[in-house]
Structures are given as structure tokens and as C-alpha cells.
Amino acid sequence: MKKLLIVLSIVLASTNVIGNSNHTKANEIKNTSSISNNNNLVSDIYSEFNDGWYNADVEVGYQKYPIKVYVENNSVTEIDFGNEMSVHSGYNNSGYTYSGGYLNFSSNYDGKITKKITTVTVTENHNVKCYRISIQ
Image 1 (cartoon, rainbow, N blue to C red):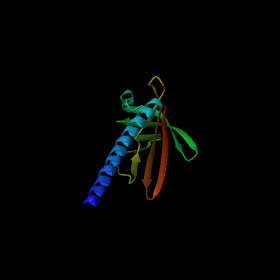
Image 2: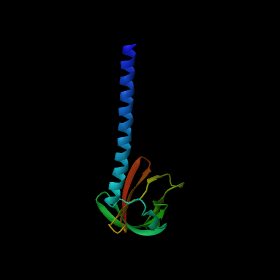
Image 3: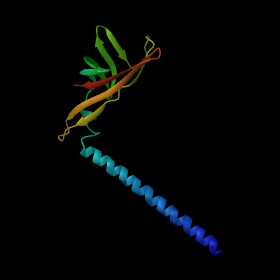
Image 4: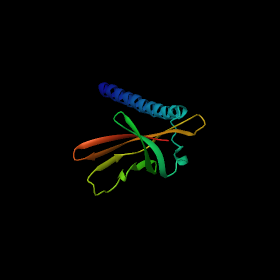
């Protein structure tokens, strides 16, 4: 009986430690998100960024080109390269797959968006192109 009580006490004590450890981890996560906000990674600035066409720069390899992009719900959903060349998310007849495009925002201490960047990957016939996009 004594052994059972000792084992039960150890199990309950370890459960309490684990429970407190999880609670501490949850607090650390909350603290990390508030620290992120202090470092200008603000999540509530999305409302300032409207859907529509924007001038942007795209990097392919080591080269940078000016382009236009369409933003919808904080994602780049279409890239217009000019000369009637474009790629877009969703269904297409050209056989490529478009993925990515979700924008990452940075802001200054006044809460103004200073940087809008994303990566779009287009795959066609086993060829993969990554476009690093920075909206002006």
C-alpha cells in the first residue's frame, strides 16, 4: 500500500509539473508575440493595405525587374510581366501551378507599412521558378 501511495504521489507531482510547464510555455508564446509587435512585425496593419494593382519589383535569380502585381486578401494573386505575359493563381489553361503569394508586412514605429514582400513559385513541366516580389 505504501508503494502504491508513493507511486501515485510521484505521478501526481509530475502531472502538476508538466501542467505548470505547459502553462509557462503558453505564457512564453504570448510574450513572444508581444515582443514581435514591438519589433514592427505588426499583424493589425493588414487593414491599411487594399486589394488592387501595385507596382513592384521581382527578383529572379540575381536580376531585378519592375512588374505589376494584383493583390487580393493580402496575397499576390497575379503577376503581370508586361508584353502580355502574366501568371495568376487559380485555374489556368497553360498547365502551370502557381503557389505562394501571401504577403509579409513590416511597419515603422508609427505603424505605417514600410515593406511588403512575398515569394511566388510557378511550376511548369518540372521547371520551377521562384519570384521574390517586393511591392513599392
